[in-house]
Amino acid sequence: MSPVSLLVIGAGDRGTGYAAWALAHPDRATVVGVAEPRAVRRARLVAHHGIAPGNAVSDWKELAARGRIADAVLICTLDRDHVEPTETFAALGYHILLEKPMALDEESCRRVVTAVEKADVMLAVGHVLRYTPYTQALKAVVDSGRLGDIINLQHLEPVGFWHQAHSFVRGNWRRTDEATSMLMAKSCHDLDWLQYVVGQSPERLSSFGRLSHFTPDHRPAEAADRCVECPLAQSCPYSATHFYGGMLDRGEHRWPLSVVVDDFTPHALDRALRTGPYGRCVYACDNDVVDHQVVAMEFPGGATATFTMTAFNAAAPRKTRIFGTRGELYGDGRTIQVHDFLTRSEVDVSPPPQGEMTAGGGHGGGDAGLMDAFVEAVATGNPARIMSGPRDSLASHLAVLAAERARLKGTVETLPALR
Image (cartoon, rainbow, N blue to C red; front, top):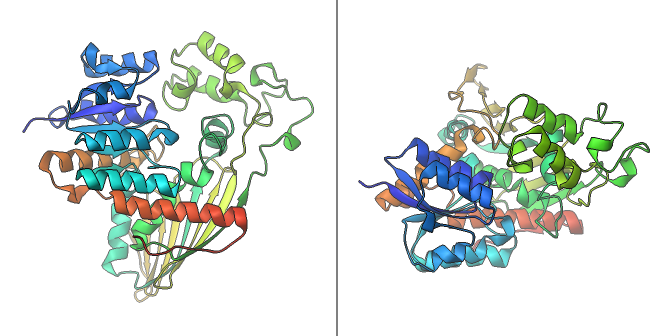
C-alpha cells in the first residue's frame, strides 16, 4: 500500500508537529506540499520532508487551485482561518485533519460539518487528548462498570504561570476579539475530553471566571514596559528574559522558544524581546482573556461535573477525580488509581508513559495517536479509528460556546439536542 500523501496548511508548531509523524513513519505517510506565509517556516518544512519547490507556496489557495494533488490535508492555520480552507479542500475531495478549535462560533462550526458531510470526506479534529494511552486506559475503566454509575467528575487544567504569560498574555491568544475566548482556545480540549469520558454531552452549564492578575493594576511601580530593560527581571516570575533566555542557555530549541525566534541565537532573542510581543511586561499588554475559570455541568443521566482552569500553578498534566457508586478514580495525566468500595482495594491501571502532556511533548502520545488514527482511516477508507469526528466535535464546541455565554451573562445555559 502506498503511503498516504499529505498537504500541510500552516507550518507553525502544530502543523510541523503533525507532519513530523510522517518522517517517523515514511511507509505510511509522506508530506508532498506546504502552504505557509512565513518563508523561514516554509523552507524548514521543505528541507525536512524533501518537498518539491513547486509545492511549497505562501497561500493555501495556490495549492487548492491545482485540484486534488494529495490524499489528505492537515489544516493548521490560526483559529480564525479554519473554515474557508476546510470548505475548499473538502469540496476537492481531500480528507481533513483540522486543528482545534474547528471554528469559533456555532454558524462556522456547522459550516465545517456541512462541508465534510456534503463532500463525504473524513474529518478528524485535533482533540488530541482523546487519543492518549492515558485517556484510553481511563475510558476503559469507566466503560467497564468498575466504578458503577458515574455521579460526579472533577477536572483541573493547570495551565501554568509561564504558559499563560506566553500564549494568553503576550501571545496570539491574548485577546478575545483577535483570537477567541480562553475556554475555546485552550480548554475546548477539556470539555471535549469530559464528554468523551462520560459518553454524553451536558444538558446544562454555568460558568464563572475573569482576568484577575495580568492587568495594569498589578504592575509594580518600578516595572519597565520591556523585560530586557526592567530592574525587576530577576525577581519577577514572569520575566521574558529569564524564561526564554533560560531555554536558550539550556539548548531547548523547541516550543515555546520556537514561537519567539526562528534563529536560536542570543542576538535574535534579544532583538525579539526588545521589539516583539513576547518581550512585553505581562502587566502592560493588551490582553483580555481570563486567567481563571470554572464550568459546572449537568448531564442527561443526572451526573454532574466541574472543570477548573487556572494560570496560577506550575504547568503540569491535568488532574481528574471520578466518583461512582462502586468506586472512585484518580488520574494525574500519567497514573490512574482505582479504589473499589467493595474490596476496599486500590489498583494502579496506569499505562506506560508516552512523553510530556505539553505541545512540545506531543501531548502524552495524543499527537501521534491522532495522526496514527487519521492516516489509517484515510489509507483504509474506514473512519472508525477517528474518535474526534465532525458530530462529536460539534457537540463539544457547542458546549464551550454555551459555557462562555453563561460566564458573560451570569446565566445557566441549556444545550438543545444536537441536530
